[in-house]
Image 1 (cartoon, rainbow, N blue to C red):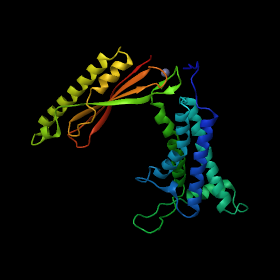
Image 2: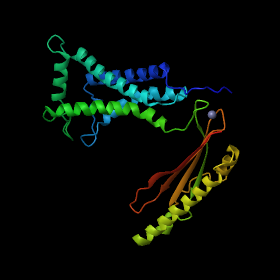
Image 3: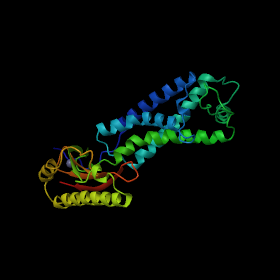
Image 4: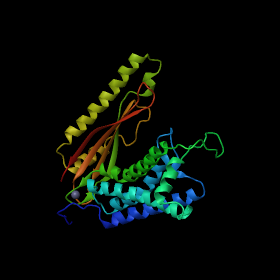
Length: 288
Ligand SMILES: [Zn+2]
């Protein structure tokens, strides 16, 4: 077992992998744009640049997998670097379109961007490729939205790694070992034919009892060795009771090289509103 003294930050390999997925994504987008299939132009509710975010997500997968594979800890500087690369790549992709599809002797790149932004228009819904009036100056806002979408999308995959527990001593992401469930005794059947205030009381009772049992598990295992908590989680329900009003998922993560581990509890509960709510209850990391 070797114990590195400094944290492993993402290195050239990670950046290289990110550059590859970024290049592939933007090349595909540019080629598709040449066939009038404009992925970047997909919007949800008119202002959410869904297409741009998707392109960003695809670009960011390289950083994610390479960081995970090399167990590189995500640091702030690295996220800023990805942001910088993705914005640069987005501008370059416009430049490539300019070189590919425009008579460069007649238009400069800046003129091309101006024409692109001011000429943006929305496809009329229900129509077959029929476009509304050009957006004019408003087009710059959408150009900015697209750039933002690509950037946010490309950071997202590594940002999700940021929340994963990491052993600073061994330079490893902790791996999930075990999952158990703490479910309330109250089920959806208990809510049937009840009035709203009564329903709320039953729900609150179910949530509170699950939270209390989770708290107890955490308290009991605050100072226990890894094997004890592993067996404790092994003794919880091993599958979720689908009809329970409140379900706590207890997950155990461990460093592959030492006993450093993390217990994480997430509550999913029914609501009177209809859709279930998820909330993180507790997270406990115990260095070995
Ligand atoms: Zn470790």
